[in-house]
Image 1: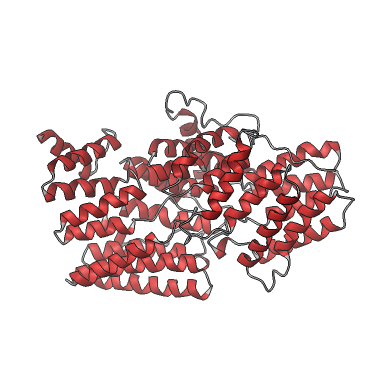
Image 2: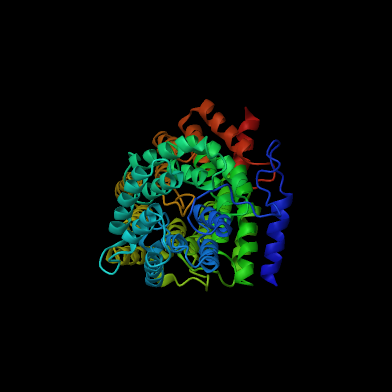
Length: 549
């Protein structure tokens, strides 16, 4: 009953939410399926070509479960269609998801299914040489999966796709899949963005020729999903949801760019529609269940609501999340959102007593399988404890973070091990501050800032629970160093534009430093970020300051 109420609520919101003029159809979900325009020529029966194109369109929007079913229909319709099994193997790969998280890499059963599909493709029908090359390229990924790690095999697949692209320069699908393989092997520690820029160059060259292709718009967004590049993907972001509005992921994906640029209302519209679509879709195969795509959209939605001071609406999403009893896939995406949503709601509002009592609550998440997500809860709890003077509980949370970080190191999940280590440094800094060890607190926090600046956020999240540099600004304010704090808040806003707390921090720092003009600028920006229903104390302070001018 609760899930039905949630679904109805999401659908009502999705179809009634005011959208900016000129964008009237931007996020509507049409009655007829619309996945974009894809044509992947195959030598199979004429009757199966249209279904094959649909399956590839689903694949390009990461609709893996639906795509697998679609490829299976092609295989059952045309028993000689070898390339259909290539498609099935692709649906088990999830290549971009696994780029920086071993927990998202194919599981043993998925590797077995993908490998079996490759073998079936090799002995089915009489595929063309081009189709054989596609089959052998994906076969390289599954080869020796029992002894080679995911990244090694993904890199081998990328090289195979580069060769296939060079062999068939007129095959636009080969170019698009090659671009995806470049993105899927890029490192979040590589700040040159060389693979991403190479992928974007390929995709932008094809954009004019295929303006309705879902993969092109989708992968352009991923190529530019970085602070210094995000503006280059704004056009693709605004088009992708129109190209494939039947895909929950296509409805959500534009919000990656909206989040990078601080366009909160566009992110909100995007994720309301995505969450509603994902929940409606999951009911077909998993009645009375939530969807991991839905949770992903809800995390982004809560983040956007909190940045624009819409706390009551963020609370509604939190309540809807708390009402969920199960999820279709308890994967890293679901686990991250399940941890982040309640932590964000407490921490972004500076409700430290609430943060101090946070604990893993969602029964549908096996937390022991997702230490990086569990760490978020202990980080929020520890920060709340440190800020409320409960040093013992804060220390316990820090010890838990260190244990989870070592668990990630042992599993060779180095990206997330690094992210948890940053959280541990941040928490240790606030514990040191609570103990009166000011110098140690600053040193620890600056180390966290340095480490965080060397990596990028994972696509799974709209952003860190609190940017390290913003936390440093807050710590400097506590130490009565407003001029130094102002620098940190302003630099935070360069990377994460329109963050509510960073704007307030900059305004407060400027006011305390005696820079009344800059304080007025930031307080005015804070007021413009919120509507008049905002009840946060920071908003009240901003209005009062501006009223005195």
